[in-house]
Length: 141
Image (cartoon, rainbow, N blue to C red; front, top):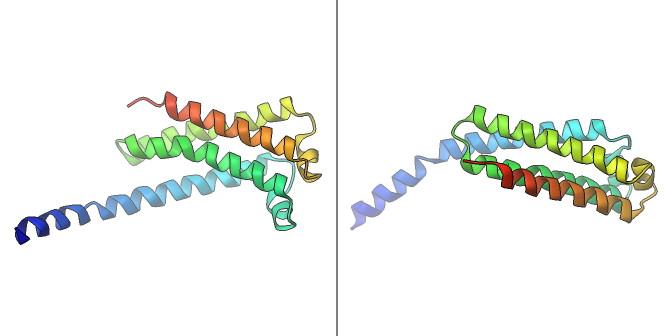
């Protein structure tokens, strides 16, 4: 019985290197998304967040969640690292598009977030999360 348990543990541990590889790639993809998203916004979200602007935090959090929803789906079903990167790239495009739509829905979105108008941040976050959910659901195996 002990041998069977040992085999199970060894088999489980053998997956750790792949886990770490996929986690590292996903973290790099999230970092890339954040860098591009922060460049796309006309306001300094990090500076605003550090200054206590809750609207900037809500908006950025929504964008991260909106990206990570399809990223997590891609992680679960990716056949390879290139496969993961392709699906993450599509999710990134969808999220940048969602930000563009939020700018159309809420004129002067950046200015309103800078003024800490939570309603503007909530619609931006909501659009990001909604688009992320739809992106994740649209990913087929």
